[in-house]
Amino acid sequence: MGMRACGWEEAAPIDRSWLVHRLQPAMRALIRLRYFSFEVEGLEHVPPDGRAVFVQNHSGWFALDAFFLALAVAERAGPWRTPHFATADAALAAPLLGPALRRIGAVPVSWLRRPERLPPEIRSCGIFPEGVAGNCKPFWQAYRMREWKRGFVRVAQALDAPIVPAAVLGGEECLPVAWTLRLLEPLVGSIVGLPLSWVPLPTRWKIVFHPAVRVRSRDPLDPAACGDLAQRLRATVQRTLDRNAGRYPLARLSSAVASLSDHAGGRAAPQTPGRSGPGSSAWPCALSTELAERDSLRV
Image 1: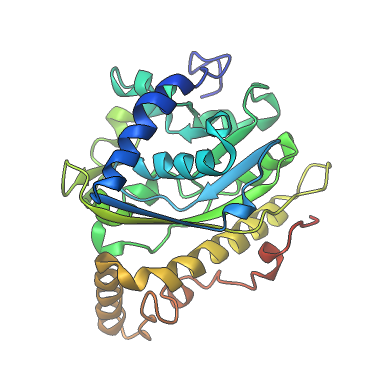
Image 2: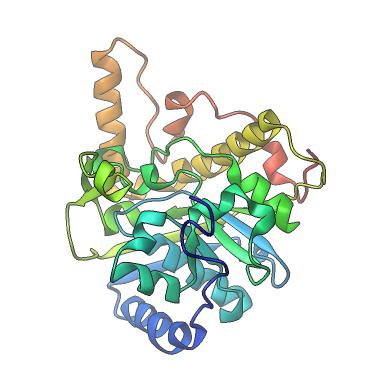
């Protein structure tokens, strides 16, 4: 589906007044009441102005992780920097959910297929490169990211924007997924995460921003180069999840389940999350991430 097929020709304006006076105060109230705790590292890596593409892991059956990332960006650069978030077309087509998501700046993920045609008002955007596979994974696979799609690299190039990778912790415990439903995919156009809890659970949220990476080449990028950069940034985020996830119960459960599975299959057990890094043995794409630690990158 392209832009016109979605019935969209321009991005819906973000209702920043509602964000500033309703949604963000409600989130901060829950933090003050200690229902949620919220910690942010690396705010200095968030560009205070100009364009930016935020890429992060995805978790929880509802995209509350996007709200917390937007809150962190607003704390650093103000509510006018709240990013538009790429959202599944199926979610935006839902009768009640779609209008609510558009109000806070959601745009169809199908737009990213032609990033050069993105509306000019999209200056800052958030992308979950795992897609719905990330936030629909069951709780026993928490903090074990799915593969990253490479489209965000082309978006960053089209917008001439730096890529800011971010690791988000807490979404797995806040809105855990009991099971990945695939039976509804022909009907709704997407897999669905069956909630283990319909109510957001008390959670320690943490967001870690990494140094921005800039794709400087203006020529069409080779798919292999896009894929390599996506894998490198994914490895950077996974490594941060590994370092921080030890305090989160579902990370320990996920590691135990993976160890049992590997032992049953006769493979070497992966390392424990939060200690030496769980994703490293489960995903051989944990390549050298030194490029992601620099302020810029030439492709």
